[in-house]
Length: 452
Image (cartoon, rainbow, N blue to C red; front, side, top):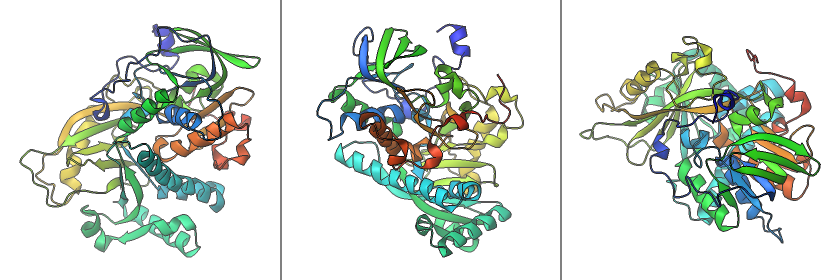
């Protein structure tokens, strides 16, 4: 790739490897042929969960009499973007419910949170159906609060929603400060919420689904950049590093990288960089109680870490945003697609301290990092993804801009997108939350601080 192309916001070459990516799948660098075909029915750009799940839903649709020809295009190796770099858990997110309810009303909050709950069941279903080995665990997650005011606000929110009969709120359990240490294993918290969650190995999930897509007739081109997009009557011409592909329908599962190909999304989906780690305790450490829940550690109402214990007693831990948000040049992490470097050493130092500082019985575990990496997420002004027919287009669709929470939305969103494309239904005839719909109006609102 030329420096000019990189400057446009394409995926960087030679990114840091994440813990999840340490053993590349056999399809990691697979290409169905030396060059892309001249034509296809459906092109899907991106092989993270969004792109692969969409292809899977299309090709496994029981209503299809004839399967469409599908070409998946990936700039780097398969599933090496955000899906291969995240925390490996998804959950009902109470802070999202609170924010959406305050801004858009209780019905909108109910739609979004119900979608999160549907995600857990849908993933369980496909993993069982396809017999996927990805360390899947249906569990609970604790949102733990260290700030007393924040804890009180969240307790009042949960209590109010439960009293008003919000169906999703019945899945939450408030844990008082007096009981929190015993229940969560976290020291000195001011309260916590227990919610449904799933823990898994995301790369193993997606590559297993990708194998199924290939088995069902899909074709794959890794290390194949799409450099230009031109919509023509009845098709989109995609210029790639391996030839020109004309697709009757094109799906942009490109998350943070969307503006590089669809400039109308500049400032609407802005790439931002996060830092993540894998912690391993000392070999001599014998944990008194295995951690079988995932966590969000809320240090105040703005900053939180996410934590996912692994079955081998190691830890995935990410976040530490306060170590750089107001302390570094913003260009080092915001409107940035460079995941070849770490953001800063302070985040890594924080990760190394978390288990000893906060988890009962882990004071002498020496749970320090053996992997640290970065990943690129996509931020939108309203914190909602963009899903549906690209405004002004007749044959381009999008599911992108997941604000670092794609695992809680993508799988069922991809299924709905497959219906939009295959059965030509309108957005309102799907079960997608109305706030997800990409519209011309939403494209006029830019992220604060964005500039060309």
